[in-house]
Structures are given as structure tokens and as C-alpha cells.
Length: 117
Figure 1 (tube, helix red, strand yellow):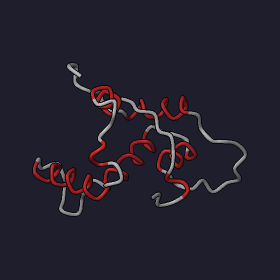
Figure 2 (spheres, helix red, strand yellow):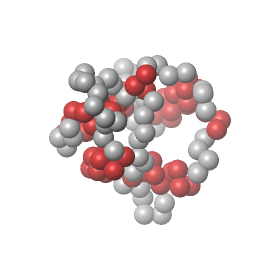
Figure 3 (cartoon, helix red, strand yellow):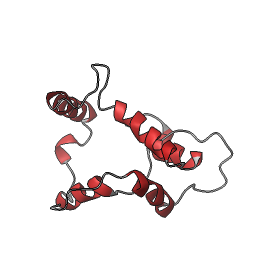
Figure 4 (cartoon, helix red, strand yellow):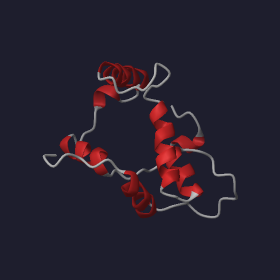
């Protein structure tokens, strides 16, 4: 079930995300439709690895970092909105940014995988 109509979106994989999916082309079916289980697992990992700056941070906090990084590279607001799953507050004349356009901006903020991946 989607949170909003804008939640469904195509996002090209780049950097580490692309490398991981090449290693796991079928994805992670254990967590399909189990967002709460995935979130709990990732939050536990981040906490145990001391990767959360404060107790107020969580996996969900990474959405804000994602948006901030796109803003820092001056991605167009419409591209950011489409990648974030936010409503674009202007008349819809066409389908929006292409996958290639999204990929262009995502490559600018991608975490590079280690050489062995």
C-alpha cells in the first residue's frame, strides 16, 4: 500500500545501490511489503555501528540527507520532488523528468561502492 499517489516512482540505481542490486538481482523478498521489519533491522544496525548522530536519528532521517544532498548539487526542484515522492505544485503537462535526467543528478550524490563490488 502506498502512502500517497506520488509515492510510486521510478528511481534509477547508481553507486552502491546499483552494486548491491547486481549482487542480489532478485532483491530482498524477505522484506517485500514489510517496511517496518526492514526499518527495525536497519535502525538496529545503524545504532550498533554507532552511525546515528543522536537518538533522534533513524533510517527515516536519511530521507532528509538525500534531499539535502540533491539541493547541494543544485538539482532542479521538480527533479528533487519527483525523486522524493513529493507532489509537484504546478500543472502537470507531461510525465516529468526522464530516468536519464534523474540518473544524471543521482550520480552527483552517489556513494561509490568499494572496488571489490
